[in-house]
Image (cartoon, rainbow, N blue to C red; front, side, top):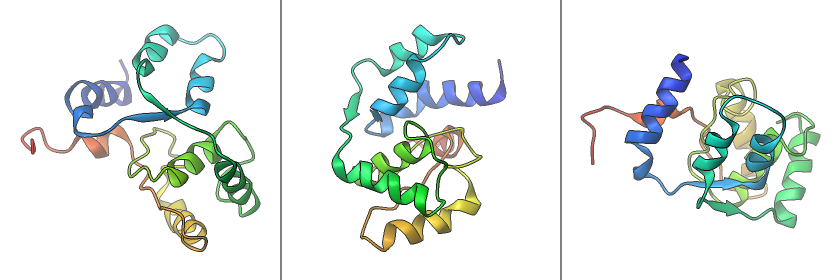
Length: 138
């Protein structure tokens, strides 16, 4: 088992109850595509989770992210994830994708692009960052 998978499993099993979990259609579509290990298990984890609606505003925000080089041009990918989190005011979108969304060098750019039109600025994090201390049960 990879370290990232272990950390994710630990967060899911021990820390997720601290948060209101939501997902978006792009996440479900991405998980449903192709043949990959534990596909059914991954999709099963999403059962019963609230799915954020893709709104016209979110679609426009995706276009802005692509135009301003915040995220790459993949409508079902990173830009869509970030747009849904921003429009629906999600505090902590969780991802292991550190190339684009959870990349510290992108945080300032995301903040600037979101702040200009008054959008919420989510803090993109990995499960490890949200796990906290084992003794940190509030």
